[in-house]
Amino acid sequence: MKLIAVYPGTFDPITNGHLDIANRASLMFTRLIVGIAASEKKNPLFPLEKRVAMAEEVLAHLPNVEVKPFRGLLVNNMQQWDSTVIVRGLRAISDFEYEVQLAEVNKQLDARLETIFIAASNKYTFLSSSIVRDIAGNAGDVSDFVQPCVSNAFAERFS
Image (tube, rainbow, N blue to C red; front, side, top):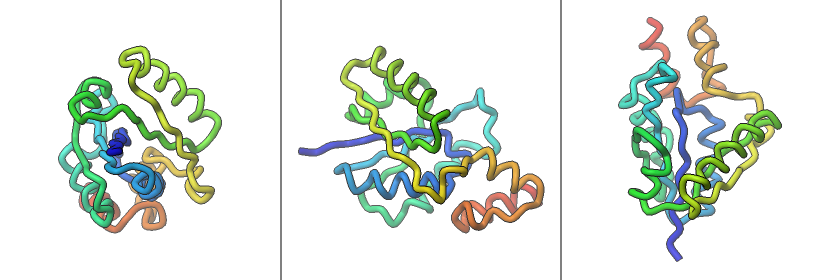
């Protein structure tokens, strides 16, 4: 049975925590689509095209993973991608409350959708894109938290 899952997010930028979830999810599904949301309302630091390019480079070693940009409601894109499984990473209890709300709303919008939660590995429970952006924006070293292409993108952005 061919099972396609979607791991959606803004990925501004993709972190080693995201990479960990994608690595583990790629082992569970025939195909994993990493959906990069445009999220203009969040005012991302990196443009959509740059976030897609970074994710493609970071995930290139995973043959069953594809990176796709998207706009609008996730559920509409899920239908286009022929997927009914959403993958979400959980870091802490606070994530759980918000993620369960999202899962329920998505299920109300499309009853076929199921959300699978993957707990973050211990070394990534503290890690978020916003923390990484804050460190990089204040000339801190983010090399332990992101892949080299992302560190380079920060260096270019803040030079």
